[in-house]
Image (tube, rainbow, N blue to C red; front, side, top):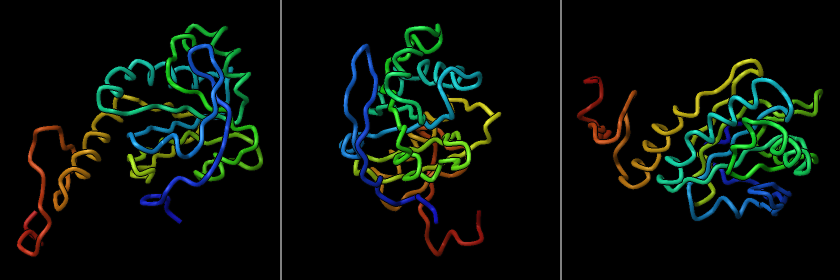
Length: 187
């Protein structure tokens, strides 16, 4: 079953951000756009490159009204230790959620049950807490956070302009489409 168009399921978890622990729930995603980025584990190899890349896009994401949450099945204590010991992760300013119970990973259908780890999953969630995009990649394939910017802009545009859709490679300010009977077979 696809998660697109569904509300984020209930959860409660501990997280680490800016030297502090905090509680995060599904309600944390409401009232703003959110990116939830699952990754397999702290203290690994591809994961820190992805999380650092996400941090490099964080200022622009914040300008778009987006909060970022990274999630692994590690604890919030492990996130703190990783933040303190890794030059790449030490830069991270966004919220790092611990999911040792696997509730969040199961809710987002990214849990690799046999390993107890999450797949590389990226989700864009609208201010109503509804999932708008899902991207899952294999463990050895790192993601490019800059690709999120265009997807978020398109999702925001479609939300703010009912009846319009964004074609492939749409960029902010370019033409959109208004689906109608007149367009059928003409694209």
